[in-house]
Length: 132
Image 1: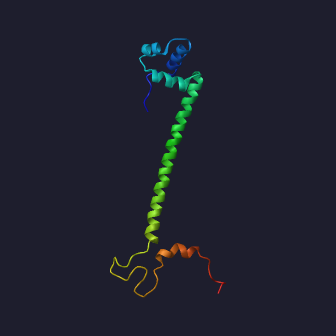
Image 2 (image 1 turned 60 degrees about the vertical axis):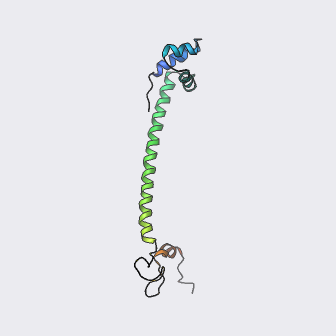
Image 3 (image 1 turned 90 degrees about the vertical axis):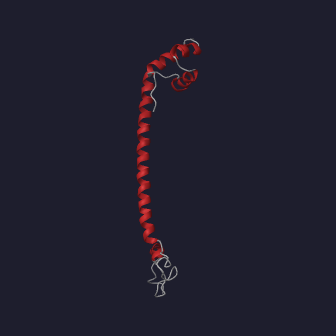
């Protein structure tokens, strides 16, 4: 983040001069800044005193720190999801027998259905012990 050439005390002094009746164009020329900078300062710091500015700066720093922590944690969560997703896909993806020159997809040489891809579906179905 770019640091300002002016301290908070200097900014407040410039804003107080403008409130005292000094023309903005003269203030900007005197301090070597643009009118856009002055109006940004007035929008941001207008009506504040030094203690409010220091509180605002402390809150901005804390906000920046918390955003960085959130970004780190969300990146870790995404990496874990990706790692778990890859291992889960490798286990549950049915294999095509044509790759190895074997039987068509979904069948083994013995003619049984390929249940590797159905692992999750089978575990979700209720057991049929007392139904039949």
